[in-house]
Image 1 (cartoon, rainbow, N blue to C red):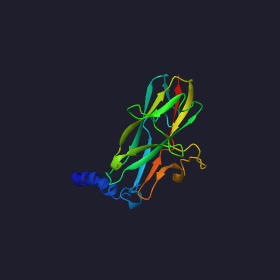
Image 2: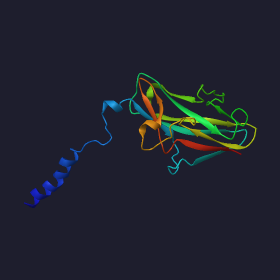
Image 3: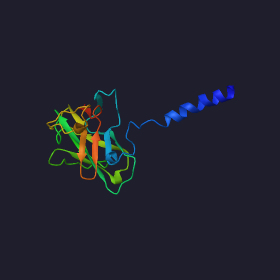
Image 4: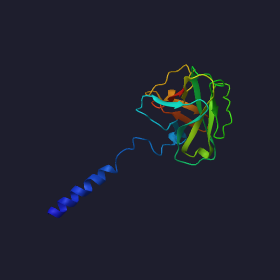
Length: 180
Protein backbone atom coordinates (compact mmCIF):
# COMPACT_ATOMS: atom_id res chain seq x y z
CA UNK A 1 0.00 0.00 0.00
CA UNK A 2 2.88 2.38 0.81
CA UNK A 3 4.41 1.76 -2.63
CA UNK A 4 1.13 2.60 -4.37
CA UNK A 5 0.71 5.77 -2.32
CA UNK A 6 4.32 6.81 -3.04
CA UNK A 7 3.86 6.18 -6.79
CA UNK A 8 0.64 8.23 -6.73
CA UNK A 9 2.39 11.13 -4.97
CA UNK A 10 5.20 11.12 -7.53
CA UNK A 11 3.02 10.85 -10.66
CA UNK A 12 0.21 13.32 -9.80
CA UNK A 13 2.37 16.48 -10.06
CA UNK A 14 3.54 15.44 -13.54
CA UNK A 15 -0.03 14.98 -14.73
CA UNK A 16 -1.03 18.50 -13.67
CA UNK A 17 2.13 20.30 -14.81
CA UNK A 18 1.64 19.09 -18.37
CA UNK A 19 -1.84 20.61 -18.48
CA UNK A 20 -0.82 24.20 -17.73
CA UNK A 21 -1.52 26.91 -20.29
CA UNK A 22 1.60 28.50 -21.79
CA UNK A 23 1.68 32.11 -20.47
CA UNK A 24 4.21 33.23 -23.13
CA UNK A 25 2.04 32.16 -26.10
CA UNK A 26 4.81 30.01 -27.56
CA UNK A 27 3.62 28.69 -30.87
CA UNK A 28 1.02 31.46 -31.34
CA UNK A 29 1.28 32.58 -35.01
CA UNK A 30 0.55 36.19 -34.00
CA UNK A 31 3.94 36.32 -32.25
CA UNK A 32 5.89 34.39 -34.88
CA UNK A 33 7.63 37.43 -36.37
CA UNK A 34 8.12 39.65 -33.33
CA UNK A 35 11.69 40.24 -32.17
CA UNK A 36 13.28 42.04 -29.22
CA UNK A 37 16.24 44.42 -29.20
CA UNK A 38 18.10 46.31 -26.49
CA UNK A 39 21.33 47.00 -24.71
CA UNK A 40 23.16 43.97 -23.38
CA UNK A 41 24.12 45.69 -20.12
CA UNK A 42 20.92 45.80 -18.06
CA UNK A 43 22.34 47.67 -15.08
CA UNK A 44 19.62 47.82 -12.45
CA UNK A 45 16.72 48.17 -14.94
CA UNK A 46 16.44 51.93 -14.41
CA UNK A 47 18.07 53.04 -17.67
CA UNK A 48 21.08 54.37 -15.79
CA UNK A 49 23.88 52.44 -17.49
CA UNK A 50 26.78 54.82 -18.05
CA UNK A 51 29.88 54.63 -20.22
CA UNK A 52 32.92 56.90 -20.27
CA UNK A 53 35.07 57.40 -23.34
CA UNK A 54 38.30 59.40 -23.54
CA UNK A 55 38.86 61.81 -26.40
CA UNK A 56 40.63 60.10 -29.28
CA UNK A 57 39.37 56.60 -28.40
CA UNK A 58 36.46 54.41 -29.49
CA UNK A 59 33.84 52.89 -27.23
CA UNK A 60 31.92 49.68 -28.02
CA UNK A 61 28.37 49.44 -26.60
CA UNK A 62 26.91 45.94 -26.96
CA UNK A 63 23.29 45.47 -28.03
CA UNK A 64 21.41 42.20 -28.32
CA UNK A 65 18.81 40.96 -30.77
CA UNK A 66 16.45 38.22 -29.61
CA UNK A 67 15.17 35.75 -32.20
CA UNK A 68 14.56 32.04 -32.12
CA UNK A 69 14.42 31.26 -35.84
CA UNK A 70 16.44 31.86 -38.98
CA UNK A 71 14.34 33.70 -41.58
CA UNK A 72 14.52 34.42 -45.30
CA UNK A 73 14.63 38.17 -44.58
CA UNK A 74 16.98 40.53 -42.76
CA UNK A 75 15.75 42.54 -39.78
CA UNK A 76 16.60 46.22 -39.36
CA UNK A 77 16.81 47.79 -35.93
CA UNK A 78 17.51 51.42 -35.12
CA UNK A 79 19.35 53.44 -32.51
CA UNK A 80 19.44 57.18 -31.93
CA UNK A 81 21.71 59.71 -30.23
CA UNK A 82 20.77 62.93 -28.43
CA UNK A 83 22.42 65.19 -25.86
CA UNK A 84 24.72 68.11 -25.21
CA UNK A 85 27.79 66.68 -26.95
CA UNK A 86 27.77 67.51 -30.67
CA UNK A 87 27.92 64.67 -33.19
CA UNK A 88 30.56 65.44 -35.83
CA UNK A 89 32.46 67.80 -33.52
CA UNK A 90 32.77 65.96 -30.21
CA UNK A 91 32.08 62.40 -31.36
CA UNK A 92 31.15 60.23 -34.33
CA UNK A 93 29.07 57.09 -34.64
CA UNK A 94 31.28 54.63 -36.54
CA UNK A 95 31.27 51.02 -37.69
CA UNK A 96 33.71 48.33 -36.53
CA UNK A 97 36.33 49.58 -39.00
CA UNK A 98 36.09 53.20 -37.84
CA UNK A 99 34.13 54.46 -40.86
CA UNK A 100 31.74 57.26 -39.89
CA UNK A 101 28.04 56.36 -40.06
CA UNK A 102 25.36 58.75 -41.26
CA UNK A 103 21.87 58.68 -39.75
CA UNK A 104 18.77 58.46 -41.95
CA UNK A 105 16.38 61.38 -42.41
CA UNK A 106 14.74 60.61 -39.03
CA UNK A 107 18.08 60.67 -37.20
CA UNK A 108 18.21 56.88 -36.85
CA UNK A 109 21.29 54.73 -37.28
CA UNK A 110 20.51 51.32 -38.75
CA UNK A 111 21.73 47.97 -37.52
CA UNK A 112 21.02 44.95 -39.75
CA UNK A 113 20.52 41.42 -38.43
CA UNK A 114 20.95 39.09 -41.46
CA UNK A 115 18.34 36.34 -41.69
CA UNK A 116 16.96 37.50 -38.30
CA UNK A 117 19.66 35.52 -36.52
CA UNK A 118 19.89 36.42 -32.83
CA UNK A 119 23.11 37.76 -31.47
CA UNK A 120 25.11 40.58 -29.97
CA UNK A 121 26.66 43.45 -31.94
CA UNK A 122 28.34 46.67 -30.92
CA UNK A 123 27.39 50.28 -31.42
CA UNK A 124 30.67 52.20 -31.77
CA UNK A 125 31.25 55.75 -30.53
CA UNK A 126 34.47 57.49 -31.52
CA UNK A 127 35.27 60.42 -29.24
CA UNK A 128 36.93 63.21 -31.19
CA UNK A 129 39.28 65.84 -29.82
CA UNK A 130 36.45 68.34 -29.35
CA UNK A 131 34.72 69.24 -26.12
CA UNK A 132 33.80 66.95 -23.28
CA UNK A 133 30.10 66.33 -22.86
CA UNK A 134 27.32 63.82 -22.45
CA UNK A 135 24.78 62.23 -24.78
CA UNK A 136 22.35 59.33 -24.85
CA UNK A 137 22.35 56.35 -27.15
CA UNK A 138 18.85 54.90 -27.20
CA UNK A 139 16.63 52.42 -29.00
CA UNK A 140 13.63 54.78 -29.17
CA UNK A 141 13.30 57.93 -31.24
CA UNK A 142 13.89 60.85 -28.84
CA UNK A 143 11.52 62.97 -30.94
CA UNK A 144 8.62 60.49 -30.80
CA UNK A 145 5.34 62.02 -29.65
CA UNK A 146 4.28 58.92 -27.70
CA UNK A 147 6.03 58.39 -24.36
CA UNK A 148 7.53 54.96 -23.69
CA UNK A 149 5.39 52.83 -21.42
CA UNK A 150 6.21 49.45 -19.92
CA UNK A 151 2.47 48.74 -19.76
CA UNK A 152 1.61 49.58 -23.40
CA UNK A 153 3.44 47.30 -25.84
CA UNK A 154 2.62 49.55 -28.82
CA UNK A 155 5.00 52.21 -27.45
CA UNK A 156 7.96 49.82 -27.47
CA UNK A 157 8.10 49.30 -31.25
CA UNK A 158 11.54 50.03 -32.69
CA UNK A 159 10.67 49.02 -36.26
CA UNK A 160 7.61 47.53 -37.92
CA UNK A 161 7.29 46.29 -41.48
CA UNK A 162 4.83 44.05 -43.28
CA UNK A 163 7.12 41.07 -42.46
CA UNK A 164 8.12 41.66 -38.84
CA UNK A 165 8.04 43.87 -35.77
CA UNK A 166 10.96 44.72 -33.49
CA UNK A 167 10.23 45.77 -29.93
CA UNK A 168 12.79 47.45 -27.71
CA UNK A 169 13.02 46.86 -23.99
CA UNK A 170 11.18 49.56 -22.04
CA UNK A 171 13.53 49.32 -19.05
CA UNK A 172 16.72 49.05 -21.03
CA UNK A 173 16.34 51.52 -23.87
CA UNK A 174 19.10 54.05 -23.23
CA UNK A 175 22.66 54.42 -22.03
CA UNK A 176 24.55 57.59 -21.15
CA UNK A 177 27.93 58.24 -22.77
CA UNK A 178 30.27 60.82 -21.28
CA UNK A 179 33.26 62.09 -23.24
CA UNK A 180 36.14 62.84 -20.87
